[in-house]
Length: 358
Image (tube, rainbow, N blue to C red; front, side):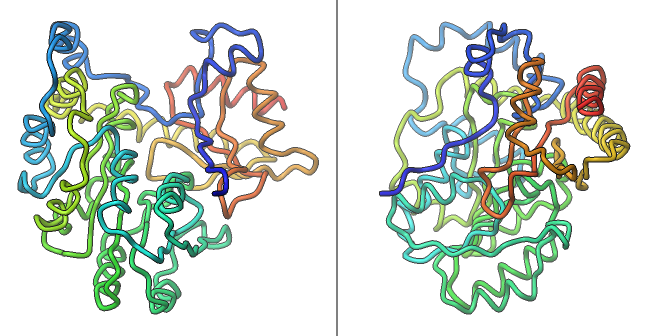
C-alpha cells in the first residue's frame, strides 16, 4: 500500500531539536488551538482528579456521552465519543465498508488515509482558488451521480477556512440521499460558527453523520476527545466496531468541565473573532501575501512573490522560533500556500512583523 500522509502541524519538539531551540520558546502558528488555552474550570478538575487514573475509565465514555448530547442538543443514543474525531474518522470505513468515496479537496488528509486502509477507491472534487475555495454546489450535484457510497466535507474547510452555508450542506445531503450516498460532515472548527452546524439535522437524516472535535475550540489536543452525531441506527452501526476504553478518565473529566464552562465558551468566540479580524487586516497589508477569508481560528495565505515557497518560508520562520503550516502537502494546493493559527495579539503581531521583513 502507498505510504500514508500523516503531515500535520504542532511538531514543536521536532522543530526545536532541528534548530537547537527551546520548545517553550517556540510560538506555534501551525496548530490551530484556542489562544485562550484550556478552560480554567477544566484545568482545576483534572488536577483534582489525578487519582482517577488508578481505575479503568468507562468503557464507552457514558458520562461524557450524556453531557455532550445535552451540549449539542441531540439524544444520547445519537452520539458517540471517541479518542479525538480522528479515531472516529478511522472507525467510519470499518463500520460502513464503502467501496467508492468522494472527498472535497483541499482538506484534512486523514479521510483519505482511513479510506485507503479500508481498501476504498477515492475520487476528489476540487474547490478552486478563483472561487475563494467556496464549494460549487451545482457541479458537485452532477458529480454525485457517479455512484459514491460516501462523501466527505469539512466545514469550515481545513485549511481554507471557507464556510459552506447550512442550507447548501442540507441541499447536498438531500441530493446525496437519492444516490444512497452517506455524507460525513466534519465540523471540527464549527464551534466558531455554530449557527451553520447541521448536527441537529443529522439526527433526522439517515445519510448524514457529523463529526465534532474538542481539540481546536476547547484547547485540549493532548486529551483527544471527539464525537460523531447521527441518527440512532447509524450510531448503533458504528458502536458495533467501537473499541472500549478509548476515552481516558482525565479526558472525560476535562471534556465535561469544558463544555459546561459557558463563560469560557462565550469569551473564546469573542476573542478569536476579534483577533482573527485584526490578524487578517494586518496580513493584507503585506504586499506579497494574499490572505483568504476564514470562519475558523486560522487563516490560509498565498505567497505572491516569485522565488519563495511555503516550505522555505516555514524553515526561515522556524529558525526565528515561529511555526507556520506549509500547505504543500494538501492535495489541490501548491507550494505557495500556508496556514497560520489565530493566537494572542502580541504573538500575532510578532508573526506579522517577521513576515513583513521577509
